[in-house]
Image: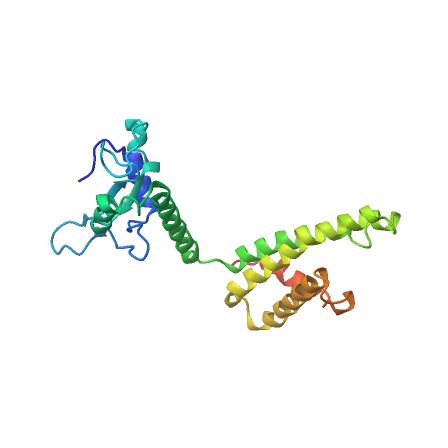
Length: 240
């Protein structure tokens, strides 16, 4: 039964963020059932209190206000079996407050990851994301690279070199890695003719990463393929 002290806002947040699934690890039982024949769908989910709602109950915090006790932050959505398990007196030491909060947070993160994975990404959307990363890399090159004004005016400056090194490590390398991750995940959105160009960028990114890590000399860095920048630019204006 729904505890009427729990607000509708808390109920909606709890069920939505848990996607109607038991938050207990390796359970994730579906708690809203539609398989009820000619009858209406029903729910078996239980909104368990992390800090017990009554004196003497597991994890009860006497300093909590009634509002705090029934707030979303103090609730976790569970199936009846796991609700019973966490509230059994002999299990109190096993299911402490922080463990239940972590359990809830990890379940909600799992739900968000699944939702994100389920949303189809268009070629244009990933091209826009890549374009922003490439633009940031290019701006770093223009501002701090070997041909930049600061480098040309101060060819032997340790501070200028330190700034360039810092920008490579802090911006270019992470951006290249992110672009490579995007391309691996969404390679199917590109035409077969695009794949050699994408492979050329990935080779560039790997070799650049190794150069920055002092694993290879600069001569071993595969040059940035201009065709890749053109491919991404064209994709940002495409319809799909």
